[in-house]
Image 1 (tube, rainbow, N blue to C red):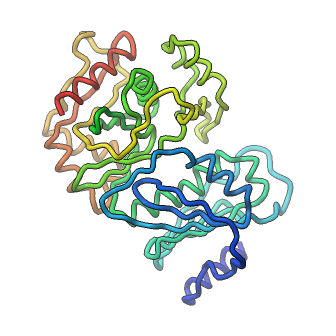
Image 2 (cartoon, rainbow, N blue to C red):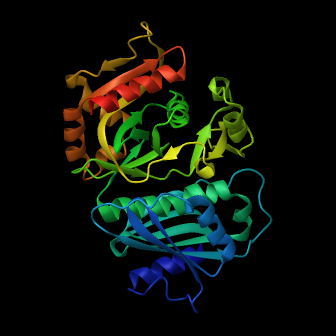
Image 3 (cartoon, rainbow, N blue to C red):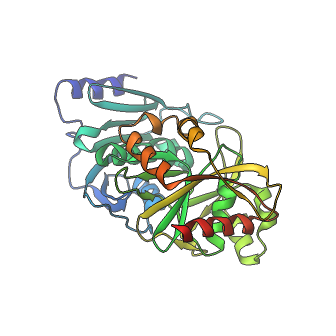
Length: 342
């Protein structure tokens, strides 16, 4: 860990952690989560990973403009790539810094107060783009955008129409991704599948609509052959939980991505239980249960500064539980009814 310790010591001494970069290098600029990000690197391979992650996305902008800078540095592989997954990143914070460390050659150092981050990756991580994207690059992007813009980071999905959006909450396996998929295939605007970021005062929601992760068993409800082929021919990723899913690129043109942040008009808890009455899938969550249920479903977000304001506004809008009908189309119809009320 000597290399990482040296970088942290330099920060503690007030030095610039980006001072070692020489020459113009290469840079990619993207609008992500309402802000402008600059990704700079001397490695085209790392910038190719950035482009695969954030290229072709609708350029969302929020009312307050913000700009962030991320430097990516590629270092040689120090030893043959180990079999299996890389170490789980260990997150630490203090002295104005946040770090996520896999090992001495793969880590991210963030300085949220300056809107900057450094990501170091070894050459062998290029063969593991899933972990590089989600556990280092996305960690930096999400954290800088959240801290720098005062957003509430939610674990959930969001779909909508005509600029209005509905949040989809629910435990793993509840069917959020399947519902998000069918919402997309049936014409709703797609904002995000797994992570949604909300301005607590305006209730404007943004996200990254790059990939949709779908279990193989969800394909039984996809009747269009072109849509089935789009998903079934996508790469398969294996999450640390062991669950395998297709990683379908949403930018392939099989639906409508939200062109701008969506104004939230409600939320639903997606349930894995089937509705007793197939014509009554939605049930309001009682007001006296809602605060506790929201906090239990969003343990990280509920500790963020903007949570009280967000929770207050969402409770005024109303939150429902959505149980399963005979086909995902029925659940999408229920979401449409909520969007029309909004």
